[in-house]
Image 1 (tube, rainbow, N blue to C red):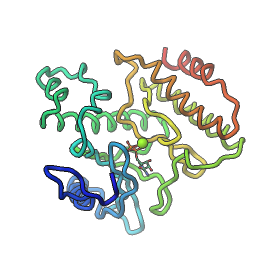
Image 2: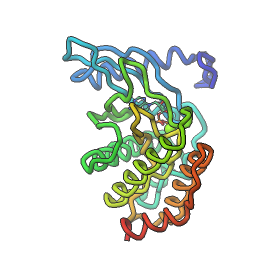
Image 3: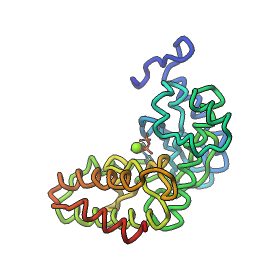
Image 4: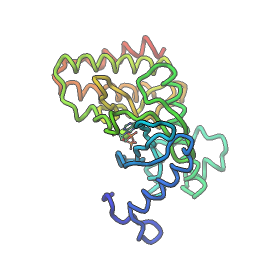
Length: 257
Ligand SMILES: Nc1ncnc2c1ncn2[C@@H]1O[C@H](COP(=O)(O)OP(=O)(O)O)[C@@H](O)[C@H]1O
Ligand SMILES: [Mg+2]
């Protein structure tokens, strides 16, 4: 999507700027207890937009990140099916609505993503995993700790160059995080150097809506192994020699079983 290009919504004429304005108003309303300004768009991701917000109750600069799920209203619904686990939705009519992409189904599906990210973030933050602190959520958005300095977001790990020593330390820190996630009953499901921010020498995991519970009737080991391979690809490019399969098996047998 071009940054301020026209979005093909109900005949077009709806621009990215108009959408951002709607989202800004929504955030100000839903999170009025926490924020008093939406300062900037940090990132347009594939399924969400993340905004930098300023805190309401502080004299100095206090920042928050708000992740808004809205893409589903503005693009095809079909590619959502892969992630939306319709089988777990008890209400059969609702499951059908989601599969068919009716309006009610779309709303429910969007809420599912928010609820999943919120629930995963809460459980993981409480368990001491390096995810941002979750602060509040509404039907379309999650408000969380801003990862960055003075309103400047921390870079994605994928965009950071590390020497071998730093790379090793960060890989070890991420393995600890992954172990704690398993202990909590979760696999990230979309882990890569693009979903880790690098803040003051410390990796912070983000982007959890597809976090999978170990109890789900899915092949969680395969997802877990893919997460580890994705991380491994990045760290190998930083010069580390890794046996990802061995590391994955060790983590899994110690923390998931
Ligand atoms: N808590 C946060 N603090 C600072 N920046 C963030 C935060 N959460 C997300 N971002 C920025 O927004 C981008 C998209 O967020 P992410 O949760 O990965 O959504 P997506 O599903 O769109 O990939 C991230 O790559 C990061 O640059
Ligand atoms: Mg992401």
